[in-house]
Length: 578
Image (cartoon, rainbow, N blue to C red):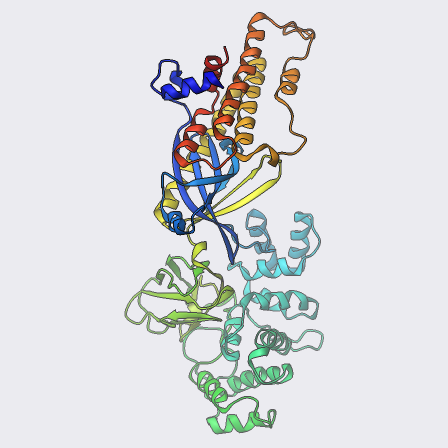
């Protein structure tokens, strides 16, 4: 310790200090305060250090309550930390993108394409073949997700399959994907019908439309039961009344674009209200709701997906110039979402709906332009769904528009994040999400981490070309130095009792009586020198522990200690402990 005091007193420019300390191979690249996201409601203050070979997570220590604002500064020189984790970059798993919520849908691949082709010919055979190829039992929820999110699916075959009593479970999950909460019943019914072509023939004495309406009304009521004053039976009667009124006015559910030529009875709003009041004598459904539904159906008939055998005009694909958001920050408008069609068309509009979502504007018109845009704002935290309804006489011509889109409304600290995963010093798996206040700082970290983690992986692979003994020796040196660094910064009390001593690693590295050229080995003088150097190296790194003394270090000393603790510490060890 006296010799170490003498060397430290001479300063870094003293002749006794090895050049390795003046120009250490370990360089600090980035340091920044972040919020560690524990869950959607909880965060912790953390500080990240990125060196060219290690990653450190530290907790800022506030010793003076008046210094709380120091947390917002990037590099205050007198900041102190408690180190939580020290990780080698090759052992760090990094993701710059947020993981989407996991669904039970079937992955889209060649198997999905094969399923689409088989489904158009024989739905039952296609489903059995799909799950056999996946090696799993039938899963109604996964199947419903696949049917809903596959725009190429045969809509007539889909309507036929979902209208069977044996498909009741799949139909239930299919309807749940829409997310009908907060959507008026006639609008929800329109959105649902636009995704299927309803069979006209009864199956086993069951009317397909009645069966579909029964399930629709049930799922719509389950999504909206807390917001309405009537029961599920009246919800079904209301849905059925809407379809019957549509049939009287327009002759049925339209499946081709263009205005209907059917000349129906002229039913007034009062006639419609009076007819429905026979099913609702207590007036649980308000006159305003009934009047709005009457006006909607009177203005435009219900429509369903076109039959694949249709000889009408070719379909037109809707594209997104800027994609739909999957996440929103609470009460912050999204970036503009731009929807494009090939040319302006006054006979197509898109209505936007969503529980606890505000749209600006709520209706998109393409009368004067081939592009229309909107912004959306989330007003309540949590998962919700945006729904899109095509309206107008040309609505059925357009495809490629998702009927619904899941959105997560989050707090502001969830905006600029990345995720890391690693095994800590006790071999426990840790996953952390870090949030940055500045998106530019986050981008700098993401770019650097991606480059360094990929580069460290390639370097590890390249190192396999070295000799077996040299590779083992080098790895032992690196492991011991890094382990001591971890223990120095985190504290030995945080390590498990199973931590192996450095001399145990040396014994495994050099088993007695083994030979390099056969099953027996005798250590050469060069090996012995290397081993003794390794011991000196460990002692030298422990000198750094004396510097740190396991207390909160000022940032400048903290970085200097880490930067010096590399395999180049071997030279410092030799200089101090000769």
